[in-house]
Image (cartoon, rainbow, N blue to C red; front, side):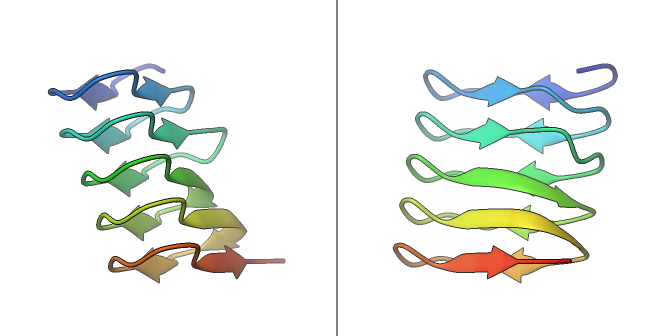
Length: 79
């Protein structure tokens, strides 16, 4: 996405604007803008202004200003 960055890791993907993935493996930021996945494995962020700090298989779908610090299989489903 425009103005987004992937600093390292492997198989990370950003499809939104103004978002970042500093590292990790197989993390994806989808359509929401201003999102971050700091690291971890197989995390998906589809919120807006939302953060997944790390962990494995965490998911944010929709919503604004959501936060998952770490862990496994955590899910935030916004409106």
